[in-house]
Length: 155
Image 1 (tube, rainbow, N blue to C red):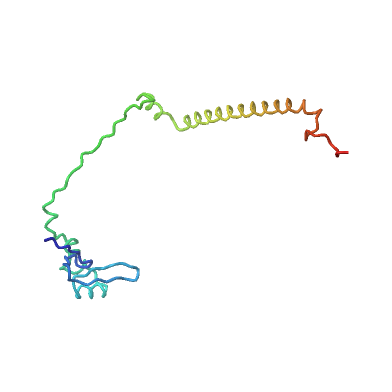
Image 2: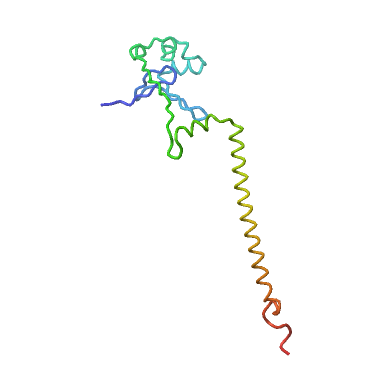
């Protein structure tokens, strides 16, 4: 049978079912303590790392046996490799990396200027087309009244 144990928030020891004390603060923090002694020590404001029998003290003073047994694993250093991308070869990428910031900025500005110029031309063409259509539509409409019906009453 497996027992669901909790750890004491102060001492770090196991608290078995039916044992211990629970303290709930007004900001809804829950503290599970092993016994009244631990609860009183917490309420006195003592630090568990200063008491020799707590797990925090043992960890701070390197008394834990499990740390000695475990070996440190080393990660293999990953070396960065530059590869070519589908759109550009390795030489092109290296050439772009080597060129100065000012050169890149100039190229970017010229490209932007070109795009804006094209957009302006397209807008002007659209405007002139619209003006031409408006003049064509106005010419035949001059003979008739706007409403399409003659003015005046039924008399």
